[in-house]
Length: 226
Image (tube, rainbow, N blue to C red; front, side, top):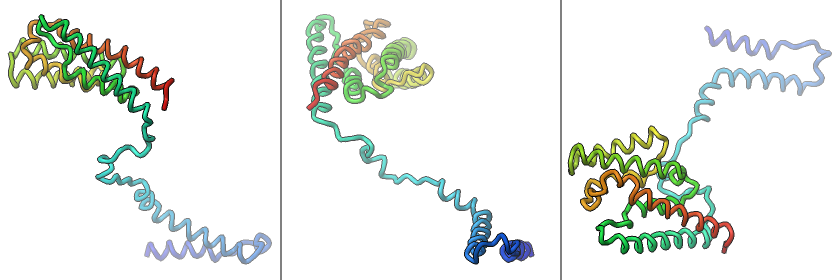
């Protein structure tokens, strides 16, 4: 019955003729009827249409493809970061020779990851100087504390990693390479003698050198393109 009343009301609106003086032509009358019918359909089915238009489906394989919006890198965009990484690791290697009598190495794996962040994605949040140094110092300290409490083993590693992630989230200093520093300290007996000096060396100290080289890489990328 409700449907009949609604339909009757709709067609009464269509068939009720206004003052003949206000109708310019028969086509305007038909247009009025079409608008009323279309409005009724939109009112009745508008929610369903809106819901279907707002639904966004992302294909599963899109996450496995390169970003379509990014332009293809030029040769200079590839060469200068690669050259910067080579120079950085070469300088760290020469420093290793100087520190060899003390049994300490500057060519640690986290600094390789830092090089990739600084040279390949310099505009990413992880490449911010605040994120890098706060995370490097804080995460290294987590490793020292975890080792002193739990000793070497799985409990110290898992606790230090969890604390490092919590620290980076709390301080808003997300820098993924720093998360490997506490595990490196716990498993690397040659670093135990540093104790809390490990918070500054070799991670933070190596990052100072990498930041200087990054500035050179950025200069060459901006001024020597090919």
